[in-house]
Image (cartoon, rainbow, N blue to C red):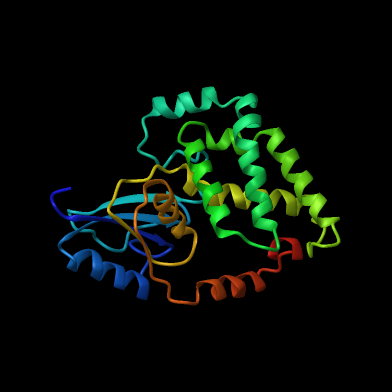
Amino acid sequence: MNGRIKVMLTTEGTYPFHQGGVSTWCDQLVHNLRDVEYVLYSIIMNPFVTRKFELPQSSSLIQVPLWGTEEPSEHLTTPFSHVYVAKRQTGNEIIQRQFLPLFVALIEEVISLEKNSQRLGFILSELHRYFQEYDYKKSFKAESTWKVYKKIILANTFDSHNRMDEPSVWSLIQSLGWIYRFLIILNTPLPKVHVTHSAAAAFCGIPSVLAKIQNKTPYLLTEHGVYLREQYLSLSKRGYPSFLNT
């Protein structure tokens, strides 16, 4: 590590692919903190966006496109042999025994009225460990995964204690598709660093949470305070059914 502090800076829809206040601030950090070696972990909409900022030679870049890929492993530098073996060994038995218990726990935590952030972090960490060995796409697109998801959601919509509208088939498919896309982050290996720094309390915080749980890496969060409000405003303008807005 050349005696310098190695920091993973995680961003979402900003640096170094989009201009704006957050990107300008990140660029100042990356170029002016010369004692820090930055690993940029950038979550982007699709793999076709153009980089707007040049990075110093001492830094490196991990791109994680949530959309626009057929295979979740397309953005990885993982050898093809590893991807191939992961697909070969991800069969129905593995999915039933190892993936589905974690998937059920994740969905139950997401739709629960009472949130447990520590439990959610543990579930995400265990899913991340699972996807380092087994195939992301085969696990999520298995028929058993769909059946379990549908069963959990419908059971909760018929429970009078929950405030969840009954979804249409389209809403069920769409919501599971969102989960599949947003959690592609869990399919990406973590770099070994001294500190992680998330530029928002958003999906880009997940890699930092994983590093904190798995490697006890210190985690710095800088949040401008309006991210969640921006998401609520965006949802309110899209005309989605109540189930998807929830």
